[in-house]
Image 1 (cartoon, one colour):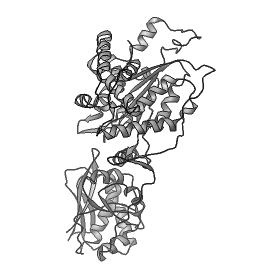
Image 2 (cartoon, rainbow, N blue to C red):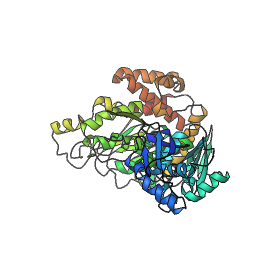
Image 3 (cartoon, one colour):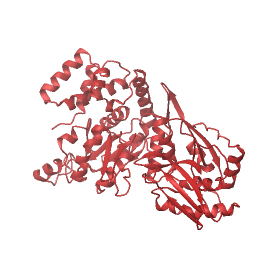
Image 4 (cartoon, helix red, strand yellow):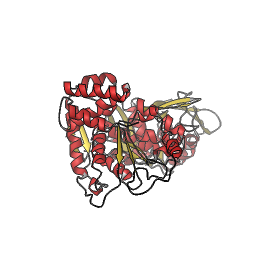
Length: 498
């Protein structure tokens, strides 16, 4: 009985599967057992056609394919190649015990790529493994570490190479993007599709955007319609810190799970759900399989909520967990799936329902009750998780652009290098309490200013921690090891007022 290795993706984790094949004396039949999904059951017809097209003659026996363990649900057309090889090599003595086999078969025997291969192999490759894969998949899969790949184009070619022992490992490809080497390589792109040079005026908002990008701090822009809130938010993606190869692979895996072709571009994602989006589309869900939502797909990048108060109350309150714990848990009767959600949260809102409350020339048409009801949609516990608050004024005719994205990106990269050289693993916006004590050292003047602010503004413990984290980023931008008085004062200037 022939046994070959394959794998299935369950709850975003790869689980190894043994493909067993047995020929029995009985009426001719071809069956697949072991909790196989309809996509695997359909493999019988693809495998039969591919084998017949490549000269294989089916014996007058019953062929049974078992996918073990039998209590694990399996899905995906990538089982085709392993099933076909287990039938074709039934009488051959081959040693493929430690080699995984993946690939969908065409009716003529061509081995084709599937979108599930990337997240599947990325999950498996926590330790060194070998895998036979479609040749067209090698280019994207070669970025995954701990992986030895054998690319094949047809079923016949695969059978011949296995029998002759001539499987050749594919050569790894160089990653073609700019990098910074500190404790490891961090990659970035010097291309700015949306540039801050287009933003006129709004110096305070641009400064806040720079601080938010450098430390991955959550930020809220408030201002009248047309003052540039969304304009700044869309440009923040291009000045975010560089990415490690592991982070690039995490983003690519989420792209593959969403059904996209992984790009492997070292640029952090930007997700912008509409305020009418359902809770399931934002946080993930599904009855059969728990698919990632916008919160998980924004991992390592930006999640932007425009028209912040117009999102449903259930969405706004559920947002508190991923903002605090950097993860989202999807619970169903038969499964629990956890996705990491370490993102920079950016929100934009009008000051009132009509939007003119802060406008110096246009009158506000809202009543006090309407304004109070509008603002009350955002709870204090939610706002307490946003570190930077910017109140923006309408643009004036004399306002001019002052800084471009390339300059801001260079400042962010310098702050990133400064942070990494003190052996800090997390961004300042994600620091835990014990890390704040370790990395956020204040001089005596800064401590005095912070203590006075705590007394005067009745700051919560979380608010104090947020001020220290923002001040740490401001100090990093100035290449200062110790947080000084001016850093604390600037951090306090971006605090949300009651």
